[in-house]
Image (cartoon, rainbow, N blue to C red):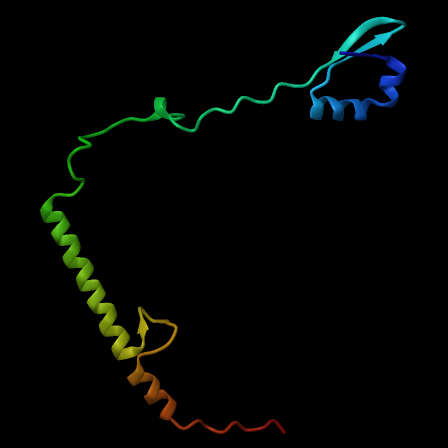
Length: 126
């Protein structure tokens, strides 16, 4: 623990604060030879563990061992998903889009048809 007069502390305050932060040194500041203050390192904030931090805010509803969907609901979901995938595939092969949005690339048979169309010549502005 070093003793620093108030006049020297006033002149080198920022430098002393840096030393305290980096090297964890402690300084006693005196005025006319009597201690008036102590410059000590601040305690680093304690880091709480993330594990279990919301334990008091959690509520269990229902049985956690049972599946969320019944077997019938799951089968219905699978049928709907398969029907949607088939609809998208059909739209892709007939129009080259899915839900009206242009997509990257095109089916080979549509790309050839569009490339074979003759382009109209542009008129130059006179």
